[in-house]
Image (tube, rainbow over all chains, first blue to last red; front, side, top):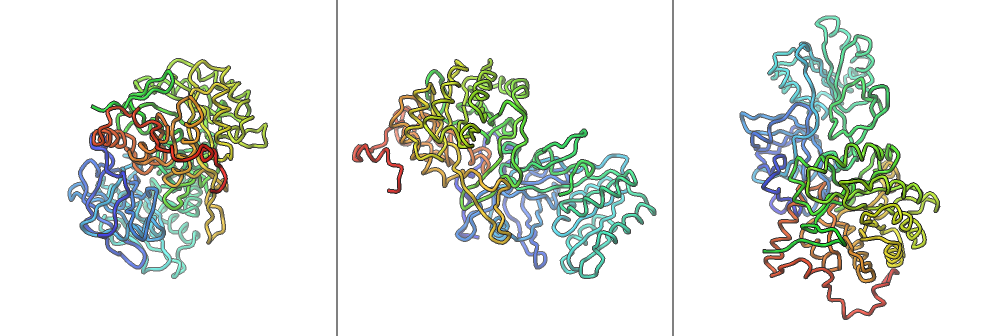
Length: 280
Length: 314
């Protein structure tokens, strides 16, 4: 991406800007037909992340793609030992198209890590993760953290078809037991997922649920959680501008202390309790 | 040594860079020392608690953005008890932005925020006026005058009137605000705009329309700042599309005594301190010892006076 240049005024202020960094791109390759994996070289401060947190990316402005606002992106992996930060993304709009242009030797300005991540309480031994498509990216670091903490993790991964199932190997390598469901095999319906979860609860027990993004999955987990008294957390999305909490753009409604409150996805989230998240 | 200090009436700023209302909060304190700034400007509050507009509240347009946040507010009490005390740790003067839908409510709120710790009040008269069919106060000279007279009576603090670009009477509105007692003009707020997703055919903002901000607003707001500075004797604070020191210099040359940086902070959270550093370097390189040398130095003597007042298509 030699012709592309970063937007003007993007040099981080050197004296006090611990969370804005310009990172070299190590690789940025296609994973399957739809997704790309970007690997950035990062310093320990940048990699001081928690599962569920995100970075606000200043996508490069070039001759063809000219995104303006930063793009929030959940962390797919952070590896302080290797000095690497990973993002898994689907190329859809102006921002991700611009990101896809980046290659080895380019740099990317990132702001983060931002937001409140997932919690894994000490007493939660059996974790169940449910996600679909690129939503699985958000749960990658959680699987890593679960492995680090010696927890049992079951991951139910959903996708349109088996060939676009994301991260299955990634989750297996992290010691998770993976169950795949797809539209093309007719196994991704909520009824079937409910059966799978109920059987997990009956056999090994589930201490907490984790999910992200999907309204139908939230609904399902809220209902199962309420029936069995199982807590859970969900990472949510919203259009953002600043990513730091100033602009109030990324609010969503939540049920908190008996009232409906507006909370900022970037600051109070992106991870919220499933009991307070409201279906949309 | 370059002197960046600027005077806005009785208020002295150590440099001309401050945030635009709505793009600044204590959340930015983690990014840089907020005392680097010439002043602090808080997000507009209303007297009552408000939830704000439906989402999406933001969308991108080519090289700029639209927003329709809708002034969510935790109310006056929360502001006086929680927000104002936070800024006491800083030396930079605190400017509070307020708004209301009726002139009398506006004046009461103005009185309510006239408390120790507040250096000036920015009155967002670009918001809808319920008593004038929802048209913003600052769209017309008459409604500007009415509300500013009441606000002037409500406080002894410096009053900054924030104007709107959604008017065809910029000069008349500026003069009305000055005559009714404004101590400075902030020029300007966002420009009413719209974007539609052609696939879903839905407006991209939950509130259908919203305010344009970012680089594409700059020529419009700069034109207004120039028009205002030409006719009023109070300081003009430029606001609209500033993202680097050259933009600041352009506004100063047009006649602004200080500027507000808004949307640029969303792209680059350290935009303001970077701009202050760049501005110092610019002045040093160009042999400018004091930024007051730049203010109003536009070389427009060739153009006739009539041009200044032109608000029709050229």
